[in-house]
Length: 206
Image 1 (tube, rainbow, N blue to C red):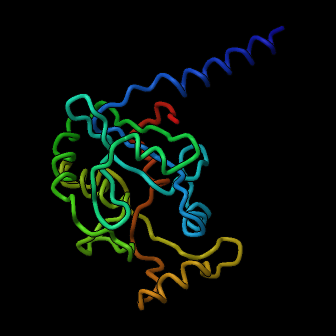
Image 2: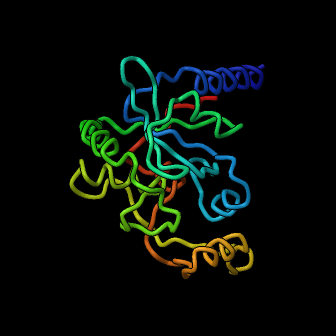
Image 3: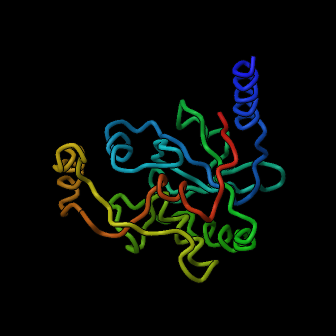
């Protein structure tokens, strides 16, 4: 009987965790984006909240009761309707919310992010090169508002942990760009931000 009661409570908690999220401006949405081998390679070398795989993120921006997501994706930084953003994945999205002591930095981070709309997407994945990939935009937004790093940068790797060889998809990718793979250079990723002690994962959405 105790086991059945525990199972029921666990299932109710999971249901509540998934369903009772009311988005706020500044929330960060983490998702496993459907982008084929590149996303699979990203997932293999990064680990997110509770071991989840995240290959994309964006920041919630609510205007006139409409929900948007500020993101660096496609060709540039842009403001995307939430209903469009959620179609990027077939899996549930995780919602990260900054802890109370950091929430006062959200308005300026939003302002900074909106000022970057139209800045080209950073397809080279190099930090501070005048372009933005998804997590780099969020990192810089809060670096600007907090006046020091809120999130962390880590050495990036493009090698498979199984073979210690470069993923073929990354080798081909950078060959087409005619540049060296930026192995070991500092960067950030959605998984790393999802595990930051500056925020809490408050639930999931589909």
